[in-house]
Image (tube, rainbow, N blue to C red; front, side):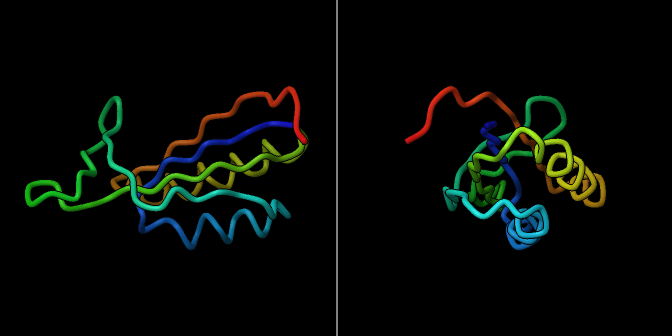
Length: 97
């Protein structure tokens, strides 16, 4: 199993849930509104007067075989609207109950 942490502009939320559905990845936890900025070119998402946009974050755990398809779809979404921002990070889950 793999865990995928997805940080994204909140405008992407519905599209990301749709991608999870299309990949048959049912379970996820959405962290709602979060703040941050990209490490290279990403604009800040602070919800302030100067930087009004906000971000969201999501965590999902999926079988290893679904990771490449899910990441590919997320990559295409990010590439379709690069100024919004979307990043996904994957790590191995050693145990679950």
